[in-house]
Image (tube, rainbow, N blue to C red):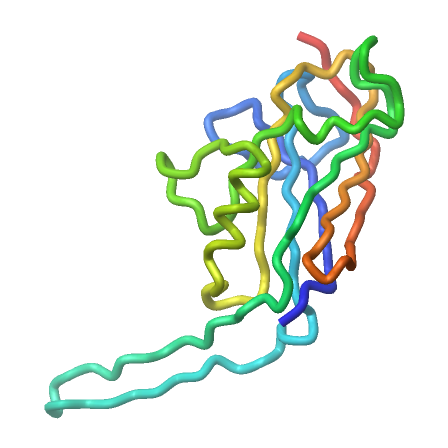
Length: 175
């Protein structure tokens, strides 16, 4: 399995739980996005189901195919395409201003790690359960001061390939 697909979507982090953004506005202190990495060549593979029964009343058990990425995620880079603050003009690398949560995390155990910690956690788990994808949510730790935010996100893998995506611009509502 090799990641060949990246989808980035804005998240609204202003409530108790991050939610998909249905409009074009986020609060300045609640900017977040999710990035889904996937291998689209493996999306249509059927589940492997094996059943057995010890006694007639026993239920069948199943094994679900696991997926192993060929290449680990080496780095994530997040570039602001508009000024974020007075000190962070357009083109700034703002990667270190984000915390993350990945789809394999347990709430309370891996909640809001740094990006390096998140990548280490993902790369130490060699199997992606049930579906050939990894979803990572990113949370901006700073408050955006510019009225528009747009980001470029780039994932680089251990084979030196990369996937990148540009978010649509989102309007920032100041408190």
